Amino acid sequence: MDFAFSSDQELLRAAARDYLADRMSNDRMVALAESEAGTDPADWKAIAGLGWLDPELGLLEHAVLAEETGYALLPAPWFSTVALTWPLLDDELRGAVAAGERSATLAWAESGGPTTIADAAARSTVKAAGGALTGTKLTVPDLTSVTDVVVVATDGLYAVDVTANPGVVVPRSTIDKTRRLGELHLDGTPARKLDASLDALADVRRRAVALAACEATGVAQRALDIVAGYTKERQQFGRVIGTYQGVSHRVANTFVATQLTRSIAYWAAWAVSADDAQADLSVAAAKATAGENSVFACEQAIQCHGGIGFTYEHVLHRYYKRAQWINGFEGPGRKHRAAIAEELLGPAA
Image 1 (cartoon, one colour):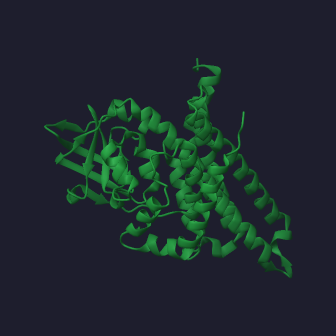
Image 2 (cartoon, one colour):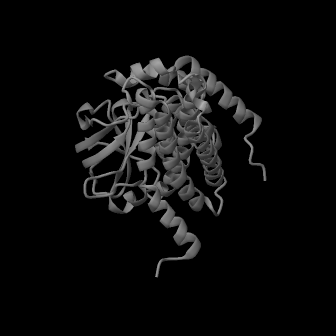
Image 3 (cartoon, helix red, strand yellow):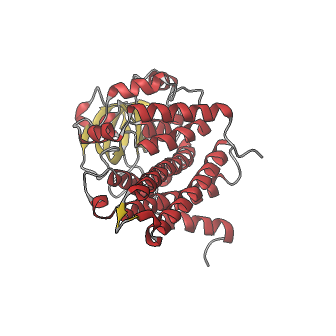
């Protein structure tokens, strides 16, 4: 069994890394995060031009891109479009996305209703009548920067064009300004029913969690690179701080956590792409590990930076906030560890 990426996939990684290093420096990422829009539509067209939205790409190519966009903290709805809605889109929407003309996200969470994709199909209360939807969805990722929303309703999946219905989007203040959340308020809002059934949400959840783990790998790696560079240059008491055990041990532990995250995230991406029998197990393991380890990596990096690491001006808090979002996505790690235990040991007595 070959656990290495192909040469084409590695070329895609190199091209993505070069592009993001050139176009998404920390300064520009921060400027976009602090802007009113939070994103630049020109970046979306550029991403489409690079082929990141091509229908021919598979999950392993998406895994490569998820890691690199996490490393750069890309403020664009790539994850929402590719990880959350890609398998649900019809040919019309997918073609428009590939051309960079449309972008999409998934709306599943409700107050008192489903909070995860896993239980959205059975618990959604949004109702459809005569080609229109009524109801409210909460914490929708990238809602203010996409053109379309795939809404989980009681009888299926519907596409809502938010550009034609601007009043349905209500922005909400969230900690991660590079992935903003919003509320979707539907009141007889026109919608188009998609061919994909509610059963497809199970596959969406698997790929979304696997890609979130890959994104977490990129976040952890960036935190590691930042702290490793800082501890090689910063001096205290006449010595480079990386020579102190209290600092070097934190960096070493961060390296170990990042490598473990990468390994298990790649396993999940492969298992889901191959429809392996252990796909659900690998996804649960990746979610339980990647979210917590990316938070750990950011926390260790902040600690090693001392007082400056806690300031708003330093970039680390932005990675920390993305790590927190990933860690909360689809439930905390303990929930997924419980699922692993039940899979391996059977239901609790």
